[in-house]
Image 1 (cartoon, rainbow, N blue to C red):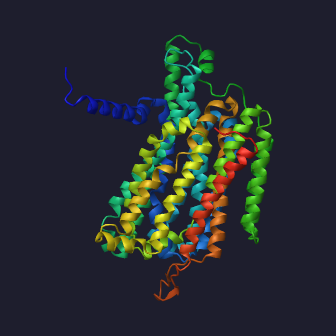
Image 2: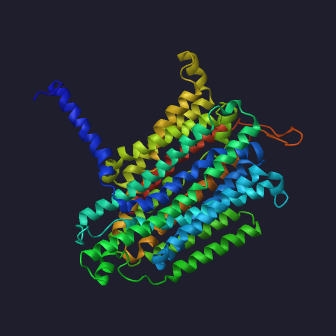
Image 3: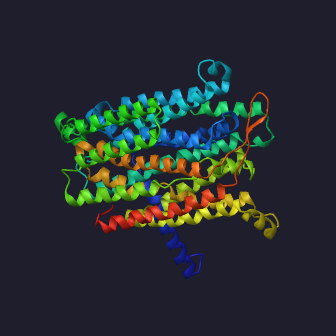
Length: 552
């Protein structure tokens, strides 16, 4: 039978189909129903951005908080993520009852959302109790605690979701288990990005035509979005309930095959040995929490720096204690990988001033910001599939180097627009390539890069970490690498102290301008951030090679 295309074209189409099948369809074929419970918790984490655009405009339009204050608040909001280590060890200790922690986290997330709903529904009644800024700070700090708890349990659930025996009760080969762990971790990132995609679609629909709406109509949309966001804690709770159902069904299937209760327990157990409390980890976590609260309440000068130093010391000590019994090669791999990811994520950002400038000067409204988010989410999802083989075949050092170079290159269009690039391109192209066109292209190119570096490390931990300390090892790496985000926020705060960026703030009662807009130093800030973002990760790669450490 002849093909409808000439031989060279048929060969090309066949090659393209094999590439598409290998990079996209194959991952779908590897999906198992047991993967769905943790994926639902990860999906909830992705949906958490549902109120991000609302939050940006709410803070800008209704709260008189400076860029420096918001950068500092971001630092405090990041600190709960460094508590993943003691929480992860707690999950190992109460493995059978870890689902209860997801419900606790869901309660904290719901409380955070309800606070914002209260501010949007009846601000006067809320301010009769606390100032609106204080309510906002409380909401910002409650949410990450809930997400930390849920994220730790989700990581542990990924280990439980990968079966060790097939439907007949026979163990899977080592290579197949390793592949399943890599697939599970990749699908976890896919679920998070899918959540951001859902968020972007909702925001595009909700903010359609927002430029012509009254303030009352905008507030009504904000309220509806926060109300819709209550699906976030509901989704994660349903994932836990579904996991319990699947585990019960697996035990019933094995029992029908004639296996005894003891044999079934051995086949389905993730913890092969009972986890004993590690008081270094638990005590260090308690000491960290107590120190954080004490310094925060005391409102000490350099309080954030003190907390960061204490946090780093405690986590490094706990990592050293936890890795003492590891083989030298495994310890070198863990440390080298942690260092690379830490410094890759520790680079500072411009802070909220960049978004304010885009809103005020480039006239990016809620609707356009939502469309940018939608484009970013779609391409992030595609990029994760596209880079899947690259992640599997390259070291973390190579991945970090590539992402650093691309990230630096993609910061240039924004810097160019600050200095009038879009005005030149508008004249050159007859209005086709304007600021929004440049922003869309830049977002499209940058989006696939954000979720790539973590996947190989997570898959290595899921497969190679001691069986009774899986959640602990997930948490120790996450605590260390998330501490880098706190360092990033500190750097962002320092840069916003050096380069002052303010947006216009008006008194709600009189309409008088209390703080004028000033973006004169934003260009310098953007350039410094780009230089630091290029230099720091490559310095980390050089240090890892100098000290002959390994990486995943």
